[in-house]
Length: 115
Length: 109
Figure (cartoon, rainbow over the protein chains, first blue to last red):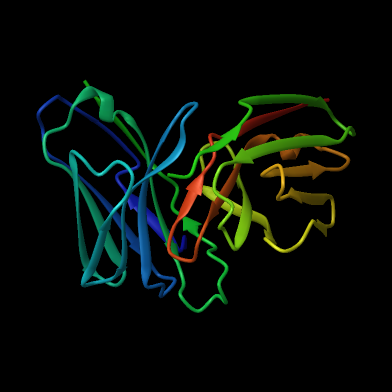
């Protein structure tokens, strides 16, 4: 089984709808991240969390919110989806005990299309 | 904030060497990373280099770091069709990373 899973894998929605993307991990890591990937722009950090009570904004948090329901679960919400939020979204995890190396483990991604 | 730039595409023939380049603006990172993204998948750490090193070799991979010019490169020797993917450099501290724009490597037979 995959260590980092994302649901759904694909989603098509309409402008103005509320959308939730979910991420679960079995790696036991305390750090979790949400990124979006756009062609030619690489990955941009949306939000990150170092434990259940710690949530931090990334580079492009406007229009998004997150919830860390448990150590293993980190959800991303689009409160009112707009077409320029069409992108590939990735969840990632990392471990605080890896000796300073920030190796992040990525889920398979969710392709979101906003019409 | 940190700015990390890569060229978008690189095309090579199977058996040749590939060199993927990355330039950055902030030199405070302790480690610098190369991640690989295969089609339809998430990113996976390929290799990394400690900031006080100039070179790291790992089988077919060679990472070169020029701190003066703020330039990082990844050389893949004897490139195979299975190396076709998007390669991202990444910099940052232990808390978060900043990723480059990604270089799509296409290997033709």
